[in-house]
Length: 303
Image (cartoon, rainbow, N blue to C red):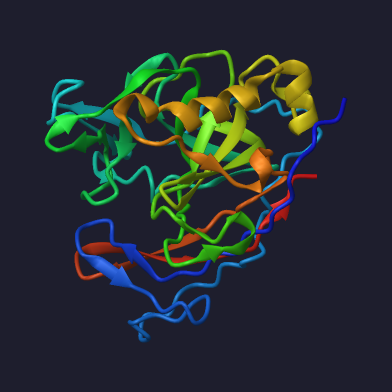
């Protein structure tokens, strides 16, 4: 039976974005590439570049992103000092958010694992630290944990950002949460912190967390045995029955044990068959700091 899916078109504009190495870079939202630093012209990147969609074909490439990066852990896991840095082939630190490419070709995207499935430590890319390493989130000086294990690999799409200045009128006027776009990877294998997997997106949930729009992209690793069978929401219900509802319920309720209200979902609680398109980052050097400029594209249908 076909599963009802909401349709939403999302267009983001750029207002402000942090530089990778300290400071804040302000960008005018009037046009795609109008900056506070007009003398620094950007190289052309087509806003209509590779669409965010999955395709009905058998993908045979390996799912672990083959790159020149490695992960170097500093400090002890589950301590305030722990950091997982990404290192390139020359031994230099790089940013998993900015430097790993978003597109992997043929409708496939790179996915950075922050939280492995069956774990509860709330790990995240430190967007306000140099080289944006993965660390455990902190609140009031204490390490944060989910009240129970998350049942899927969880992380981010590199080179994406949810704009906090843009009100999405199709999702109750909610503003972006100022973070990278989140991915829930539903495959059977448990990944490790810092793994970069090739995934294809198959659905999206428009979570609203305290008024902020926080998209949850449901995707599957190409290494999963069922990856070639799952291409859209209807396939999910056939090969992963109940998974989308379980993801929605998990993210709706996880704050309740801490005395907070349940999160809400837009689009009538339905998974979207259109999702926010990638936001492209263009790297530029300003002095010794790596600054990243953004442009946007509108949402594209999966099919």
